[in-house]
Each structure stands twice: as structure tokens, then as C-alpha cells.
Length: 133
Image 1 (cartoon, one colour):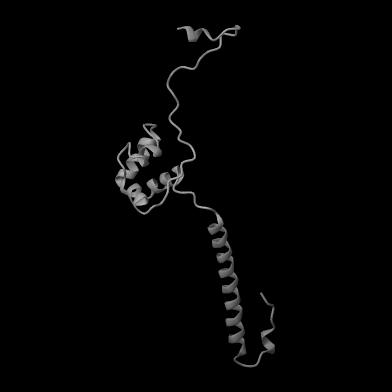
Image 2: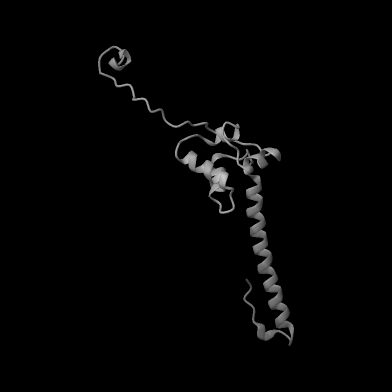
């Protein structure tokens, strides 16, 4: 801001200068907000993803169905893609996204890790002996 000697001002002008300085500060703040909003708008939207659904489910206003889906997904019972595809009950939030044409974007369709034991290499030239069992 300006360093200004208010003593040199005619009577009544100090209030006008202070209003002007306040307006300039407001303009700078609005410009910073606009730049931040423009940067946000430049990021492409690829659709609702797993992270967004998890955050949405944690919101106090989320439906009980969405919260239950998130809990089941957290327990590894299924994944968000199963819910969106209709293989699991669909919470109202998922239905609303679909009804409004909002796409879903799941970069990975990870399934829980298999519970079968890993193949163990027995350090010889052939395949692991566990393959023969």
C-alpha cells in the first residue's frame, strides 16, 4: 500500500484517501481469488472418482446408503466400480450423478488382493514345486 502523509491533505480528504486505499486492497484480494478460481477451472474434469466418493461418504449430509457402501468398500467387500455398475445397491447420490450425466472416472478397477498363497520358488531350474501340488 501507499505510504502517505495524511497531514498534507485538505480537511475531509483523508476519509476519501482511506476509502480509496481500502478499495485498492479489496481489488487486490478479488484479483487473487479470480486467479485462484481460473487455475481451478483450468484443471480438466474427468468425472467422479473413488476419492471423491469416499470424501462424499464422509460428509455428515451423506445418505446412510452411501456411508454403508464406503464402510463395505473399506472392509474390502467390493469396490466403488461395483456400486456404479449396479452390481451393488446404488445410493441416491450415485443415482443423481448418473441421472444428471456426470461421468464416473475410475483409473483403476482394483480388486482386493487374492487370498491364495503366493507361489514359492524352490530355487531349482524348474517351476516352483507348489505348481505341482
